Image 1 (cartoon, rainbow, N blue to C red):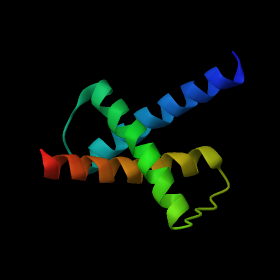
Image 2: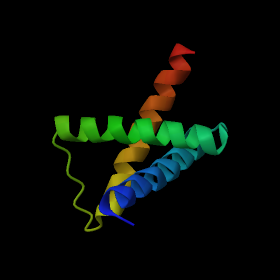
Image 3: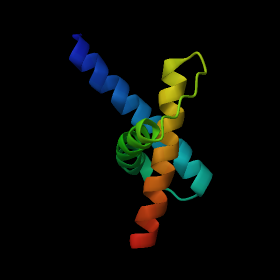
Image 4: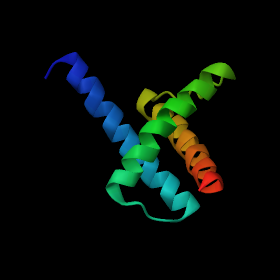
Length: 85
């Protein structure tokens, strides 16, 4: 597997985890597709906000840091989606 494919797979896994955790925190379902969508969009939103506000978690584990940032982003995305819909 080349580096680009590994990156895409990692991004999908982080998105699934983030979407699942966000749905547990906020309640509601959505299933695997909903988790993936919320998590992927949330990872972009969370990453953007972390860069804008210069947030560094410094947990010593880059994967865990990315998941936490993606979960926060997914929570924000789900809340905004619920307000709009």
